[in-house]
Every structure is written in C-alpha cells, then in structure tokens.
Image (cartoon, rainbow, N blue to C red; front, top):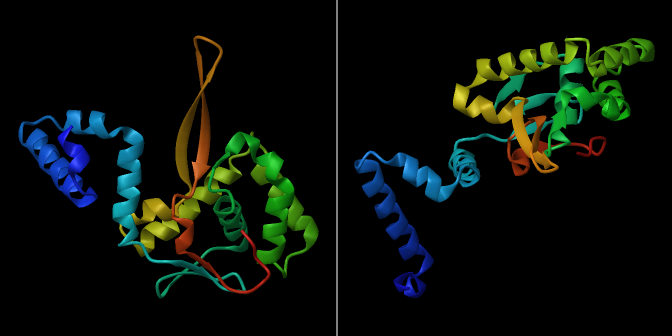
Length: 196
C-alpha cells in the first residue's frame, strides 16, 4: 500500500485532496461516510477550540468567559456546576440520583439562602414531573447566547446528546443525556472550595 511510506503530514494532505475531490463532485455524503459521524464531531470540537475562550469560575462563584461575566442566579450556577462535573452527561429523568451533589453546589453558590429554601428548590429540579430543570437550562442558554455567537455558545450550554444502547436482539434504547461539551481544559477554577 503506497500510504505506508507517507508521513502523517503527507497522509493529511492526501486525505484533504481526496475530500476536496469528493466535495467538488457533490459527494460530501461519501466524505461523511468515510470519516464517520463521531470523527466529524471530534473534528468540529477540535476546530472550535481555537475560538473558544476559557470559562473562569472564581472562588466566590462568579463565572467569566473572557472578560464578560456570565450573570446567573445561584440556582443556575448550581445546575451548571453539576453538569460541568459530569462530562459524561446526565439524563434529566435521573437527576434525583444527583440530589446530594446538586444540593451541595446550591449551598455553595447561595450562601445567604436558608437551607430549607435550597432543599425545596433542589426537590423541584430533580422532580421529573416538574419543568424546573428545563427552565433553568433555558435561562443558562439565553445568558450564554447573549454573550457570544450561536456556534460558540453551543459548547457552553447544557444541551442534548443521545447515546444509543442496544438491549437484546432487536431493541434499541437511547440515553437522552444532557451535557456541556466545552473541553474541560478550558475550565479554570479559582480557590480550593470547588472540585469538579
């Protein structure tokens, strides 16, 4: 095979040339098939890294992207910290499994609130019959969208991701995970109180 003698850079040049030829022929579907959806997502993330700004969380739980403060209420910060701590994603219907962790984040971000109000707020968030978690994620999304373009914001917001699981022979199940896709090396945490 002639590719065995090529350097990695030469292989990349050859791959680029082949992809451009397929694109010129109107067959980007073949490029996608050759790369696979997962690799395309990985490439999309790699391309975005150069444009994404670090998310800085201060010791007093203020959030900054670049020089802009991300103005969130303590409950929104608690929800955001929970999802930031779980890059593998969380299903909304399983939020009750994270009740203690969410409560701990909320108590850190809302130090002036009484514990009863915090516990009541967390109960609403983890209740699958209550729309509170969707409302909080929507607010978080709106704040990030006000600070940056849609493409960049898509890495900072809590968004959906479906992971397929095959159970048995002919049944397909999906985990409807919610994730923050921001590369974690872009998350800068100040102070010793917060560990993700």
